[in-house]
Image 1 (cartoon, rainbow, N blue to C red):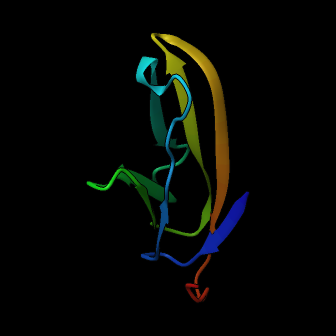
Image 2: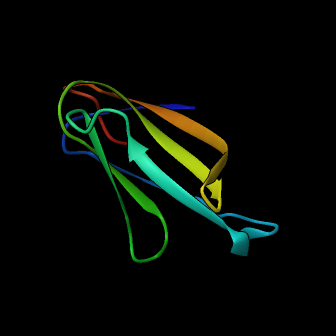
Length: 85
């Protein structure tokens, strides 16, 4: 997946574990915080904020204890002049 946004725009992402979720944890990070930041919201979603032009990946990593079992990422491109949808 990919998304293009302008600096200071936001994009909310919902991510929930299913199945045997009680034994798993998820971390969500930005590959380049100078381009995009990500924080967890009170409702359980994650908010991505465009910071400055460039490309960053928001990475979702799932762990079973300390062992990484899977991951996924979304590419975010931050460009000036992009209209938020």
